[in-house]
Length: 162
Image (cartoon, rainbow, N blue to C red; front, side, top):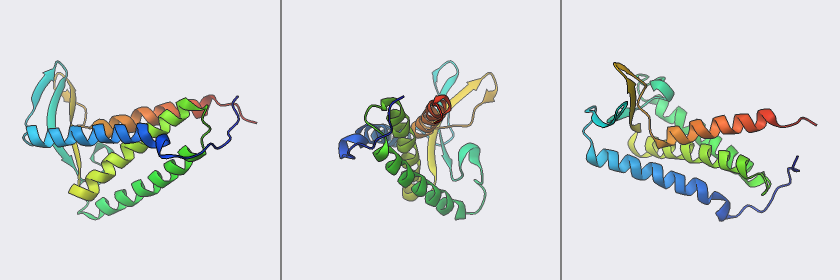
C-alpha cells in the first residue's frame, strides 16, 4: 500500500475540482436561461430537463423551514469544503483515485454552496423517471457529490488497517 505522505499543495491540485465546478455552474446557468420553472422538456426516454429550485438539502430536506436552513447548509458546506481542501492537500500524489474522489466531492459541495449564497436555493434540472415515478430533480454538483462519496467510501473501505 502506498504511504500517505503529503505532497506539495499547489493550485494545479485543484484543477480537476475547478473544472468540475465550472461545468456545474455553466449547466445551471444554461438551465436558468433556457428552461421555464417546473416545465418538463423531454431529453431522452426516462430523462427530462425540469428546472426546479431547492432551498433545502438532499431530497428537499428542510425545504419548508422558513429560510434559516440556507445559512445552516451554507455553513456546513463551508466547513466540509475546508476539510476537503486540507484532505486533498495532504493526500499523496500517487493516490490519484482518492484525489479524484475528493475533487468530485469538493466540486459538488462548492457548486451547491455557490447556488445557496448567490440565489438562496440550489438549482436542479435533471429529472429521471420511470413511467409516472420521478426521482427528485438534481444537478451536476449532486452527481459529483454522489459519485465522489461512493468512490471515496469504496477506497477507504478497501484500505488495509495498520
